[in-house]
Image (spheres, rainbow, N blue to C red):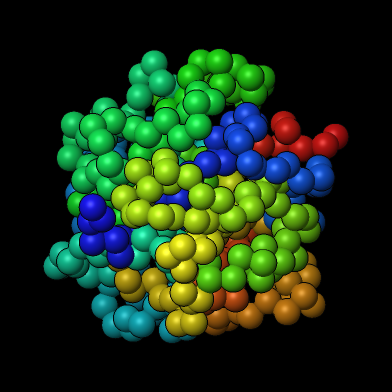
Length: 363
């Protein structure tokens, strides 16, 4: 039986382990090697997440995974362009959180009141989840479950998707925001050499953000222009019973692509059955859930010039916030992305010590 399925899917599914650990999963085809980053883009600086209460979010996640508060402040809503934030008056609260692999930017649109939880559609479109990996010898699935994560996946434990040493599960935090939990055996982690050694310094680490799209071919072409290379790995339309167990939907057929971006991965899914609708609305920061992928660059002006040449649609003008120069844009289905340069935030706020995926790029 299917639960109400219009809830956000954390879409690691069949080949996620192949993309995030370097271990080939059945059916996931590797693509030709390519440079990881184009021009001055370093990697993903942060994932933007709109929450109902920053205190609650910090408390929930810090009990389960490395989740260090770096800074927190009230900001005039008008500091953000109206093209990305509807609220124009009063304050919003912004917090920067450090994980081993990427920063997270938490935004509370109305600090005086709590927004209602929102579970995004399982089949998309839009940003659906981030993934936390942990060793199977100390699985974070158990910790998250004990701390109150509402599990989506069927059964009493994570799902063994293909017998290759990785288990998967998906659940919702108190705001209804989806996360994925992957548990990797020591053999899988060790097989990835230096990257595995780096990851084992931590009890858990974030690996990717999932974007579910109604037109994966178009989305992959767009991000290839952004990054200067194609996906690291592709999964053709595939049917497996274990898909259903992970997503709690019967009869799933889905295709996927994965990009490396220096320190983090971008994961794209398209559901064939049930079909993912194509996103058409311009997404805003106001809504609870994942709100943006924000790339760090060493030269924002050069990056914007290059992106303009390849037809990227910008959302608002360049602005400055907390020592960063920032400009937002949208992908073909209206999801927010942004590009930012450190102009005074300090070296500790950049991602230079997080660029783990460069180890598996061609030299």
